[in-house]
Image 1 (tube, rainbow, N blue to C red):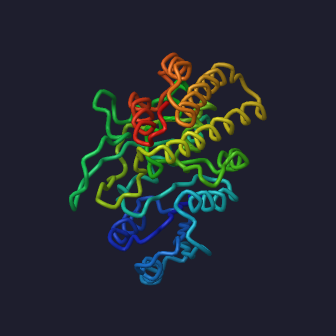
Image 2: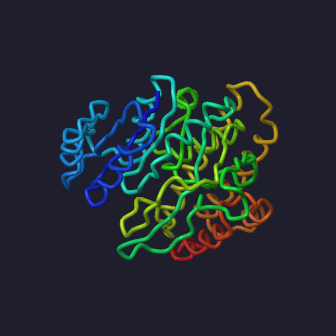
Image 3: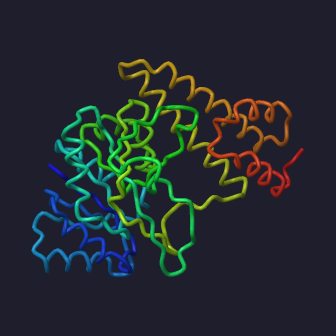
Length: 314
């Protein structure tokens, strides 16, 4: 069973191209589940008419009862899709899949039972003034296209290197991690970090998606104000606790991973105290000691700037 899940919100601008690329796959999905997150631009009707026009009896579109936001919407879709054994492909509303994406990725997973999550590379393209950004998951010219990389759980375990639309996921793995999934956790972060923890994540260097960058992508903006940074740190702490719970509940040798998680939480606590309590040397010392566990080298500078501009520096 191959299932594609797509969460849609005000996507009429690019939806038809994405729907065409799904319909014209060389290996058709067994079903496509689409959740419209209370769009106001006619996306729901567009998709319904597309399904009817092409006689896509195995495609389903429904409207969320309220605007859940893309994180919760994808969580609900993946939970629904995982009821049946098989492979699940998360799909964004504004990219273009290459015709053999499902065929290539399904074949790799079916041949290797050690894989829970497989991520292809992406081919970014820009239009309508889309801002040039660093795209994680673009082709690595130093590696063969068919090379499979097995990333290691290390100090950068929170850094997600491929977008969720590039994933193919075993449904039993989704069921396995669902008890640890909170509503505000992004699906790419959940699938990436838990499979990284298990050692069941693989990266394919072949670009199987044209990854559209434009002026309204739903990527997260990095806010500089103190309140938003405190909230982000709190979310990261909850996520690391979820990983800890998984290590406790499931058999396996997670000693090295648990040490990484512990150090990551130590630096997060120090950053939180710095932001909430003002500039303290002991907090700075801890942050510098465990600086390799920062999501980026700019984290400390961002915290200090947020602290100073808030007027709470002491």
